[in-house]
Every structure is written in structure tokens, then in C-alpha cells.
Length: 158
Ligand code: FES
Image (cartoon, rainbow, N blue to C red):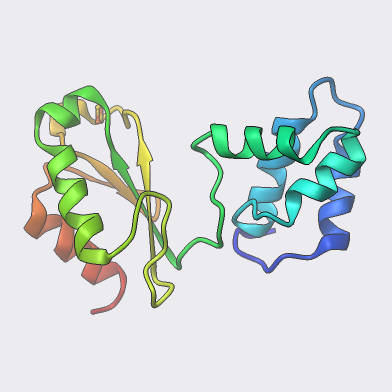
């Protein structure tokens, strides 16, 4: 299923059950839930905790420890902005800080219009063209505030 379908407790339980035979099923379950629904929300923790016989705190701990998991549905477009060393040395942190402030969101956040989610990544293999990012899976590189803004506006059809 495509990312971003709305949460469905029955389907979520099916997904959890499908992974019960695995050793260490928690991370595969969380990835599968995110793939199905586009995020791993607070609703997932009690369900997983109950099925795996863990405390909710343990499950929350895992969900919040890993940066891979979104905690709310993703925006229509996803920007993965590189925070790796090469990109940092070319100003990616400042670029990110200004962009997030302009959009009024934090990492993993979604703009109010539901259009854009911004996530960190740590090296895209595009170090020679840093700062780099993926916008809806497409690499964009040698970014500055203007080119990044233009790419986002174009994706959003602005
Ligand atoms: S550090 Fe950003 S692409 Fe390698």
C-alpha cells in the first residue's frame, strides 16, 4: 500500500500479527506500520505493547529513539535534507534552520497546509555536490536558500 493511508486499528493489528514470528519483531513492525500508514502515531504503542507483552513506555521509547519514524502523517511532499558532514561544511545546518523557521515546523514536521514534511538524512552519497537533499525521492544538490525554495515551490505547484 502507498504511504499515507489513514490509520486503521484492524489493519495495524494484522500487520503486527504478520511479524510475530520474527526474532526482535518491534522494528520490522514499526517500519511496516510506517510504510502502510505513512507514520507511527501514538495509537500504535498500546497495540504493539499489548501484542508483544511489553510496557507502553518501552514501545514509546523505541518509537521516539529512532529518527526514522514520523509521528504524524507526512505531507504530500517529502524533503529529506542532508545533515551529513560534507553538507554541514557547506552550510546545510544554516540552510535547514532558515527553512524550518520559514515553514514554521521542526524536523519531521508537516506544514500547516499539509503539503510538505522535512526530514533529516545523514549522507545521500552526493557529498561532492553538497548541500544536497531529496525532494520526493529526486536528488537536488548544490543548494542555497533560493534554489531550495524554488524546488519546493515547484513541487507544491506554486
Ligand atoms: S554528507 Fe550530504 S550527501 Fe554526503
